[in-house]
Length: 352
Image (cartoon, rainbow, N blue to C red; front, side, top):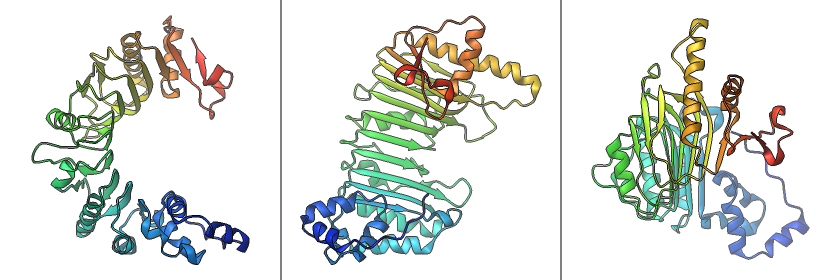
């Protein structure tokens, strides 16, 4: 995380120009500053700006990088004080990245309660406990708050005691969540307008049965069993109504099977399959499993209009081609600016 840079004094002629802007525009500018701490610091630049931050509609609190391995009491005090001083107006976004221990959980509960009381639309929580395998226990009101339109929950325990009710939720990202099939169905049934679902290194389920007609975008971003050494899981995806599918990041599992993805228009494969095997004697087995998985995906996605392969899968595809595999006409290789291998691809792709 970048360190905060000292703020420079605004030249007088620029200060006069800024002072002529209406309050609503100044507040909008402050709301778009990446860190609320920096937004508050702008009060030293001009008298006009001194209290304007209290009207901001977006609050972003980022735990100081230099103390990322421990809690920072000053950070918690700063957030508490900021929420006390800000006017109790509607929030468009409330974002917290923080380390914590069990002594500080009550502060975070109060922050979330404040955000919900301000009818926050976009709630983003990234919470990492310092105790081993600690997940933040969400209050039950979080699971029945209809104000959310976008929700990101990282390092949080999914523990609803009843039916979830996210009536206006359009996008949901869960990071490192322990989810079973019943809980996933609870999420889907309680989110009638959910359009985008991102599962980022979640675990605890064996089948993703996404039959909701509202969900159109699914991102399967990594899979890691709670027991890191266990890569024997077989995961099935049944999502007949989604239009876009991304499979990316590290997959610590044995197989990932696509059952029904018949409505897909676009798919992107940019993952790395991880293994528990080690040593040169297992190299051939590793390559065979990689090739089997990628071949299975490609053959299951022949109907997709746009099938994109990322660099993570390109090496496997190259081996398959050397063995006589003919990529289908809908397959394209994603061009990354950092890789000279793809500099000649038209419009960012290499066509096969």
